[in-house]
Length: 238
Ligand code: ADP
Ligand code: MG
Image 1 (cartoon, rainbow, N blue to C red):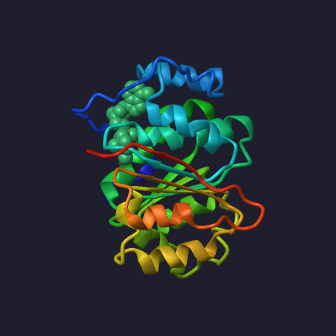
Image 2 (image 1 turned 120 degrees about the horizontal axis):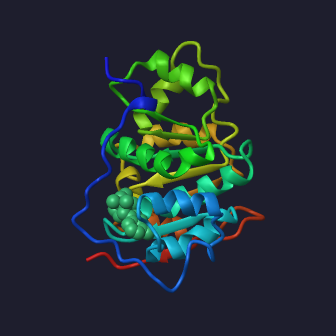
């Protein structure tokens, strides 16, 4: 059997691309607290990248965000840091679901969340295929702050025996990582099922390397009543 997700330690992606960091903003000025900034320093991250400078504050304020920037630009921490910061401020106020198209990406996301979040008490589970579903169901019962999942396996888990409905009814933040790859016909039925389980009042954030037409259409859609339109950050991919 593969090891349980909590002890699984894949290495961080060794990106050949140097993320462009901006020295003009600081993590402090974006509202991150000292313990989180210290956690970042231990992995030698000292200045936000552009997408991080742009997206951290709107995400922290609860606004929907669409972030488009090429691979290696630091999209993971652009959504992980505001989520972790909110956990630091209110450990019982956060439940985030992060969806991503592949198992490998899910493990990488969980690892990045834990690297910055563990010192602040973050709990997370990775719900992907190839792992024991009963074990995952048990872990989900412990109400981790962050659930990182591939859509198919999360659906299977929620539909499986013994799982009560309403499991996702407390979700505050939903992130679609690699959103362009998720918003395709392959994932459409699973996503529809998952979205229907979550409160409509939730925060929804999309991060992607390619801003497809489907994504821009979502950005242009009028917001549901009482909601601000999404904050859109977009850098043309090359
Ligand atoms: P993307 O999702 O945009 O492809 P990632 O979030 O995977 O990019 O980040 C790519 C690499 O950049 C990772 O190794 C990550 O640890 C590193 N990184 C992220 N943010 C920063 C930062 N502010 N400063 C230095 N390195 C960073
Ligand atoms: Mg990414």
